[in-house]
Image (cartoon, rainbow, N blue to C red; front, side, top):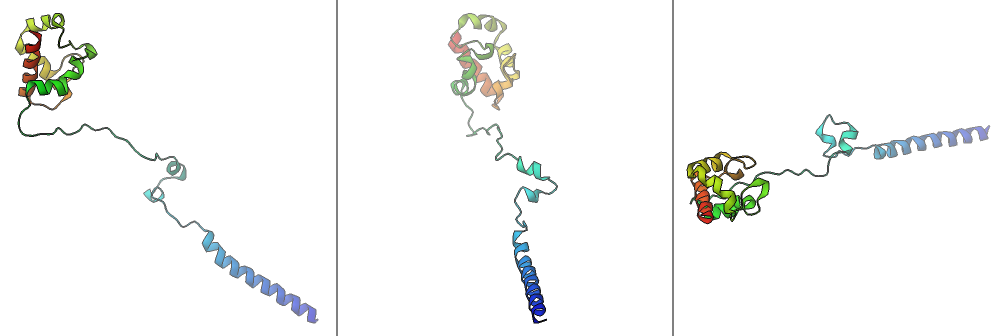
Length: 147
């Protein structure tokens, strides 16, 4: 009978040790960490796993305003020259007098209107935020090179 008590004692000791070990190990094994993606709330795990690492957004830079208006040559070199030096998108090249002849025939005011309002592939003001006077200065600069 002494053997029965000793085997019962060993059994209970083993059960108690197992319970203690489970009580210690279980809390350590449960995931308690929260990532920034998990804390967004409402996202399922698949959405969180496939999030991009970074996002890239192009934005137009704010023009550097020095207060003084830019002269025609500066405007041409910074805005207009990108297309009018290469002939991109059908823009007449600055040195192509034949391409400018029909445009010159329409008059300076028509050229101002086209440059300020846009024409064909050219956006209004060449895609810039320059004043009308600065655009007119650039047109005058181009006309002085074509004549």
